[in-house]
Image (cartoon, rainbow, N blue to C red):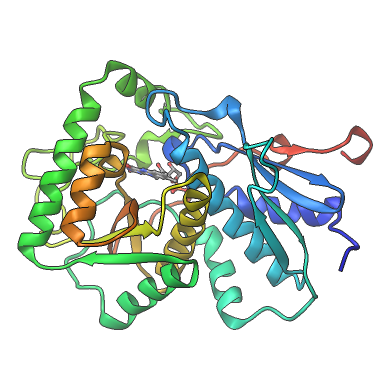
Length: 324
Ligand SMILES: Cc1cc2nc3c(=O)[nH]c(=O)nc-3n(C[C@H](O)[C@H](O)[C@H](O)COP(=O)(O)O)c2cc1C
């Protein structure tokens, strides 16, 4: 199949792709059509130099957007063959998608696709109800389907040990004024098309909190609405930690997040222990896993919330002038 994708197919799929999560909601991606292939790029203008100096977060976010792209194309009956980092001389090009043999979408693809507009980061306390075994299995399966692993941190002492690693990492990050300034700069108190809306930031941190929140929220919580005492913490990991592995991890992340949404679960991400190399290694050793932790998630049953805004799709498409 070498007919190629059209501009309209790109625009429709990119509209779903931009619903992906990203550090501070910077939306560090661009999309283009080249020789009939859809290409997704990391946008160098949207890097976070203090929070994400290596570009890890941007590649994970682009991987998540890539997963949505794949789903959108598959559900439209035009699935893609994907090549990751196709041009060594252009490392910002994360992936190239060319049409595969047309086929009907699978029920799983349809369910995950339907979850795209419903998914959002829920940073509020969850209900204490445990996540049932079949949902846990589906989450692990979602990570495996995208060549990653998902380790659930089970038991009070394991969760406490994880919390210690996460707080240590958070303290390291918080010591850096440039990191703090970058976070503040991406909190939005008025409606905006990027950044983290203050209302989505979760409650202000309190000393009794088991896990360190990123510090987007400044609202005091109502009395009695503390975080769940035994959160389900899940660590997503990849086999290696090359730029390609990080894009693979982003796809797995999005598959896990959409699977959680499809199961009626809420998720918030906390990546501080992944961003501090010593904490990341401690986390890996504590799990007894080979490979590299790429994301940590808190998973449970949350209150309803709202998806956060995104920039208009036409702002992230690079099209030849005559095709716009
Ligand atoms: C690589 C990566 C790291 C993230 N780290 C955190 C984090 O540490 N704390 C947090 O609250 N959200 C984190 N997020 C979630 C983003 O803040 C969130 O996706 C973004 O604000 C858009 O909101 P949405 O997920 O509701 O669409 C992370 C997301 C990505 C992709």
